[in-house]
Image 1 (cartoon, one colour):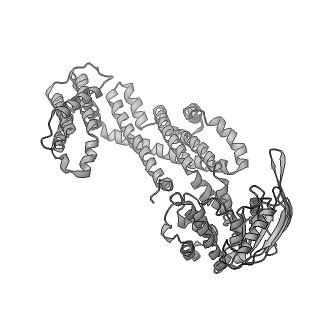
Image 2 (cartoon, rainbow over the protein chains, first blue to last red):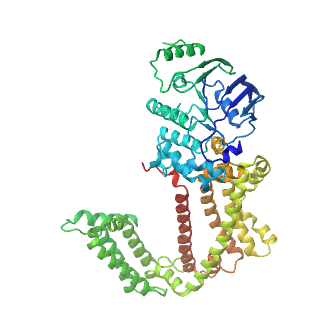
Image 3 (tube, each protein chain N blue to C red):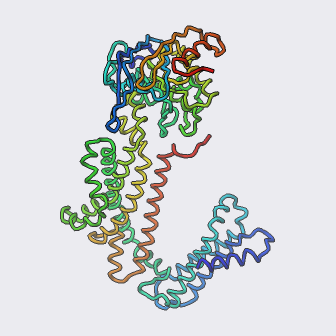
Length: 261
Length: 332
């Protein structure tokens, strides 16, 4: 993992194995079961969407995969190695951009390189990452001066500059207005196709999952279990009026217990 | 006084017709400044204070300058507008000087030694400037050593309290117990424990500003949004990075609240400490002079203190605005 982080150049996509993971929280003496025996494998370069009702534990699964928390049962493996701690080879993008407000856009993007002491060698990567998300002109702005969509693009650049092999996305477009969301989804698809990382996207937006993912895993309400998997083979860019798309959407909504209209 | 200035100003402004641009407030101010000069120079002092001529010259110069500005201000652009903003204040200062001069030196209504005319204060600066400069130097040295060592230690302890649960467990109760005790209460003990009164004074100043900085820094660090740590950790940050590059900048707003509180406390303790056991310093000077009922010297020193302390407060504001530039409202 660390060897990968040291190399300069295109990322090597990583695999992720989630093996029989169960997790619960103890809040004020009450046990809350969050994940119930989840197993899921992502092959390198795959784009998987986790779909489930709000608060079902999808975000917890991402935190476990990021290494921010440890599962109560089961194991998570990245390229066959057990995930013990956070590592820049797999990065998490949150629903809130959580940019550091005291840093300019450029220094926000530079955070990962700076933290690992790679800034001197790879300073050029910052400008590349900024142009990748089309924010070159805002390099010296502070986060409070950015719109929600721009801030989320900075958060993406801040992750991508580290050449992650696995990107964990926690409803990254969830708080954006619908137009910004559409353009950012397209942009993200382009980044995934060019940068070649493995992507695990948590969302509760069926259309988003259908537009982006190669595989959709439907989770149940809390505690989350895997209800069904859908493989989507349609070429990109996908169109929402495609008959297959409409049929899949209805099936997925059915799994989620919603009658489609 | 302000009523007098108000009516005088209104009268002139409302009755005169603006034939060509005259800055009326400047004109009124000039009248009061020149009147002060005339009273100071023309009327005899009840008791000799000295420096009356110098004060008359200063106020006369001010009056002449104001007169010149009154006639030319409309041609001075932005600078002129900035001066014009202070017009009411310049009038008020002129009235204040006049009343002050008349009630003290010229009539003795406000008697010596408890009151002093403006040129009494001026006389102190003229005759005792070298000793005052020395005192300023001593005070700044004591304050500087105390304040900077205090905020350094306070900040470090605050970060540790906010960051480490174990340090917080042991440290916070002690800080909460000792924090509210006024630093001056420690004076008898410190004068016994420290080798010299100077060391004890430095410690007291440091204590007075270190405690609010420690408490506010701890509060700031412990309130940092956990998500910032999560982001930084996934990006490869170690603990050192998390503390210095995440916790500290995120807590800086709180730290500055502590610094401002500490700054005010440090002034208070500085003067008390100097009054009790120092060879020089502004606090010592006040104590020394009041023992001889030299109240003019006391007032003159208070004026110096006011300027020094407000200057230091201003400096801290400038430092804060530099460091917290990211909080400013948007440019875009």
